[in-house]
Image (tube, rainbow, N blue to C red; front, side, top):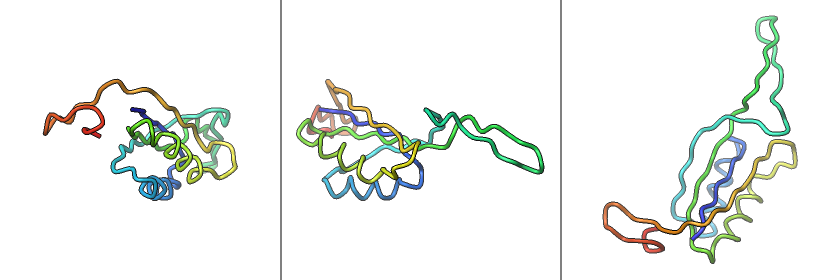
Length: 112
């Protein structure tokens, strides 16, 4: 099993969610996040004063899928989240050794 974490721009969330649904992903976890990479934030003017905005709003998606689906999920997220501009985000893929569904006691792939 693989855990796929993606940090994307917030306005791309609906497109990514639809792309994941099309490849057969049944559940995702979404967390609001803030961060920066090469962008290093930006400056804004507010009431005549200049402010540095270090952390930009992002969305973190987490999906756990069988190994056979991992490549399709990564491609779906990358395709739907891409704008071609700096700050599109990152995708991380990790191995998952065990999963337990608390309600039923199902384990591993049957618990996804």
